[in-house]
Amino acid sequence: MEAETSWTHYPYNYITYVPEAESYSEQSDDETKVQTFSMDSLLPDDLLERILSFLPIASIFRAGTVCKRWNEIVSSRRFLWNFSNNNSVSQRPWYFMFTSTDDPSGYVYDPVIKKWYSFDLPCIETSNWFVASSCGLVCFMDNDCRNKIYVSNPITKQWRRLIEPPGHKATDYTALSTSMNLTKQSYSVSVVKSKQVPGNFFQWELSIHLYSSETMTWTTTLTDVLTGWRGGDESVICDNVLYFLIYSTGGSDHRHGLIASNLSSSSTSSLMRSFIPMPCALTCGRLMNLKEKLVVVGGIGKQDRPDIIKGIGIWCLKGGREWQEMARMPQRFFQGFGELDDVFASSGTDDLVYIQSYGSPALLTFDMKLRCWKWSQKCPVSKKFPLQLFTGFSFEPRLEIAP
Image 1 (tube, one colour):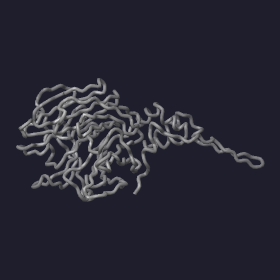
Image 2 (cartoon, one colour):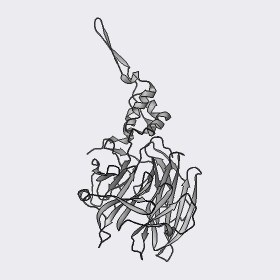
Image 3 (cartoon, helix red, strand yellow):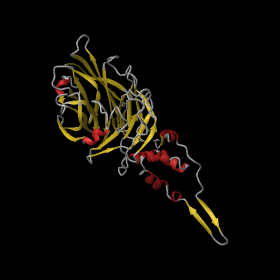
Image 4 (cartoon, helix red, strand yellow):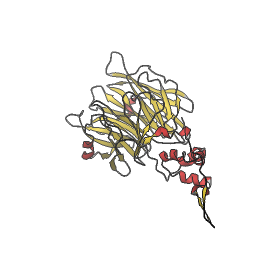
């Protein structure tokens, strides 16, 4: 099965156009002439701009190839602003699926028109890099030295490399997250570093580092030593609160825990004072920001074997400490994944949650508003060998956001 097209055929910063066609043609007989006009030639620019703003974002790129006039309209700053603020059009989050463990190639899924596109990501070198997204921005961090951090708009291909974050150069675990402030057109990037105290398996040094695009600097907001717990690679920012998962190293009835750190205050109290137990025994947990609310998608472990997954649930944090179960995956969808390891990929934005098994390119969606489970259109990639792994992430497709 082939993808709809290669997205690289429609690069935003280099949209080609065909020469403008004649606005009318003439056909004459002995006594009369019939004129046929192109309808868009009768429309003023502002009205045509308004009409084009109702297109799905993937169609905007095609519109720019129609003629020079349309290209100029969809490339204008006014159009980008009007398009991004057109609440009548649902630009739902896209999902990028890596199709190789060696390079960052893959396909992106548009749930509005239900199509996959071949898609190239900027900056990222391999598929095992850390990825975080917020409001059209996608942040990448390398998985080796963990000092190369890029912020980009994957649609327009604009990107910026951030200065190296402070803290330990070599860490055992690192969690990346980002948050975009649309009002200020600024963003922040958080890196949570966790490193084992030498010679002590039960104690782990943990530090939080925050980058501000307004000051273009990093600050270390908190450092602490955890006993019986370590950091991991899962974090998210919701309503200026940084949430990240911690993992038991022994001596606790909980396999996972959640820490909440308010980025607006400079508290020096112990991190464990903000400890929030998870809703049940989870095989893994995936954190996401859905409309500034913290949502967790987790694998539900068996009571006698908590490391074996028996289902998948979705919970929302209410009031800062209480979990509300939003949904559980129906068994027919759970079985539809075939092989489903105790860990899996899941991310979401707005009202849409994506869930993907590492062992299969099958992609399942859950609409939080409609409470509806649906399979995506089949991804145009097949499993080539038994140990081939698939993963991905979601992001908002936006034209007006720049790093």
